[in-house]
Image (tube, rainbow, N blue to C red; front, side):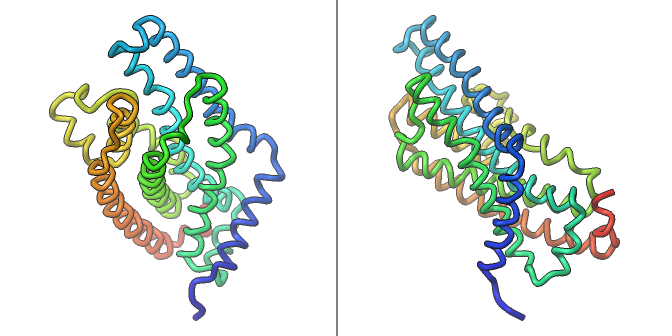
Length: 269
């Protein structure tokens, strides 16, 4: 049996790229929602800053809203980009063909991760530029901190994406809504727009078990206190590694269960 093939990964990426190029509504939708979110929260930030004064606590806290929105969109779009590429195979009833081809499962998953990055570039990068133009907020100026935030969020997004794809394999398109909705269950516990201290005491340990919490706490540390908390990022990466391993195992078990139950040929039903 041949080993891991980057040529097969590239072929899968080329397939998904052609799908994006052939449908301009897909490309517009990828940028539309992040832009609406950024503008809505950006204008709210401007209002709070003007009402409380830029140097007040309220003004400083409001100054984190655009950054939080942009990082949240990176997390959401990375997960959805992973899952949507997988769904393309189910909608076209092509999944069984792929699993019977020389394409290895690892190659398939790597191509999904790569396409989630491509979708991020198309959907989020233009919005970060608009944030500079409209509100003077430059996410790229965070430098190393932004790089660390991105890695933590991407790994967590792919973990969720792996689990969702496993559920789709096992239970078919009946589990399709998970691709849209599951990440939103993370949002209130990930403390996107407020610190962990705002949560009830009994919920705070749950929040600290999620890698995005460390990112958004780290973002507030950078923007308010001008301190990059490397310790938070290291803890987040450790949790990410554990979750990715669990998600990979879950995907493998769910795939095996789908093969045993004979549901792979009915995934389009």
